Image 1 (tube, rainbow, N blue to C red):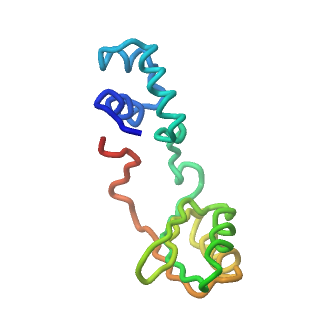
Image 2 (tube, rainbow, N blue to C red):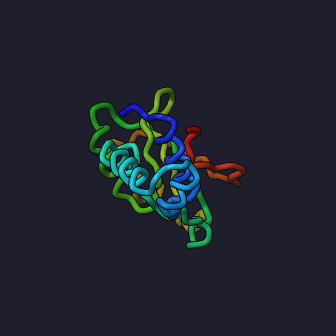
Length: 149
């Protein structure tokens, strides 16, 4: 789907505040609410807008530890491994990568004991698992889900 400047303005507004009424977005970009509504529907149907969600602080809900985990898996077992990883509570991202690691995960845990349980009882016990490296996040200085539109 080709996006024009108006589509990009709508996306920027929604990235900033997904609960902003279409009427307010319409005023900001000098269009009718109906036009904004139609364009949003078109972008949803095309898969440009994948959904709407609340940005929940993991620490505020009990997940005070986060980590990145590099995984090496046995060749030919990638699909099976991906399916299992996405089913594990605490796994926030599963990224296929080049380089030393086949997969890099972003995980959250209640604390380091919970992270250890996640790593040794859920991930390391999977068929197809070869080895891993866990990098505990000491602090996040910057994070953004907004794309530079």
